[in-house]
Image (cartoon, rainbow, N blue to C red; front, side, top):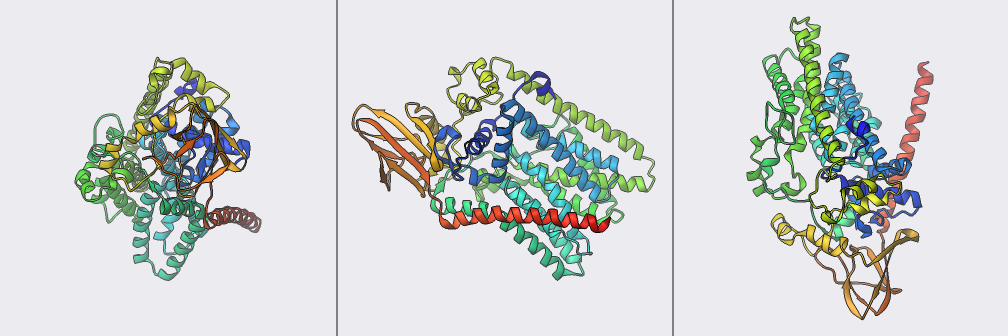
Length: 555
């Protein structure tokens, strides 16, 4: 990997946002000072709510890994490798589960691993890759819907779906749609409909219990606050994919996947009656997601009827990864079917697939090499959008900060004014979002207010101190939500006036002032978190005990 050879970081478009997420949980773990809702260490120590809204389980898991490695470079390399290997093995094992030949299963796994859907994390730190790598493991259990033997693994399906819910919510929506297709097809053809329904319901119930912390957190925050969405993509058509005969990019499928997907679709249509049921189903679902991710959907017209698409979906190209899973697995099945029929073209097909792997791997290598070289340039940040105070940060300072043993140096040196999930007066639509310029508001009201000293004290409380030359009102560089508790100079204050992004206005006395900020979650949310943790412990212990007994019985 070029990053290993050159010891280079890649600071892509989403790197600073996710690094702050993981830094915050890493510091919570290291200091044994937890606050599930309030970010006290990351995001300029403004007390923002991020973790419960965005993959809480994985946030803490990545925080633990970051704390143990103690280096941003080691952390990035480790996570990159983890994502790539998990992606490749997931598609490989799913292909094998559907009785594909090992060679073709391996080829499909590598093609998925080197696709932009997965390398998007390596190149730009797009978190969609985290969700996509988990989908094949869910499908390994979900394909039992198509089998009339009623062997749906309740524990396996429930745990794998729960992991995805704890990781990336948009991927949950994509996966749920795919599972509905599989379930409906399986249910129609099943001779044991009630048994299938019961087992699927049991798996869904288990997944729900294991993710009570997610649902509790989402309900608490969204029921009491209006939150800023992610950046609205006004020209959503431009963020959809198209077939191409060039290298793969964010919006171009690339020559290898374009040819392979078209070949698989055409083969299945022509030989539909001769192909297996699994091949038929996976190809049809793959076509569905491929069309959804493309410009054939006329996304701009759709977004006028459903404006939420510009913020919830943002980029239809994200669904290309789901299409890739289904079509690459279907491709491995087709190749296996041809191999079993002793088709004379199979050697040529195998050679073409290996050539395709060489091309996609080379493309991925070049992309990473280009970004790795940027790290050693005069501008080491490969994506500078919304990075504040860029002219004041030298290239050497950036490199020193991320090479430092002090993890805070990196996130404090390179700051990004991402406003996602900040509280607002009212619901903000896409047009209003653009007019209010939230990125500028974050830079002005949070990032650039350096005269405030911030410290994390006991019980996950954030302490602000500052000196005021006279009695005056001042907006604080922190954020308050419905259940936030604020103490000004020892006195609890309620019903504070806030600005457009939730910064509270307080009256400061002349001299030293102190504010304590904490978040008081509801009893229901607290209980949901505890129940979720207990459910995970009991489920994992029960699974281990069952497997030990099963192996003893087998031997």
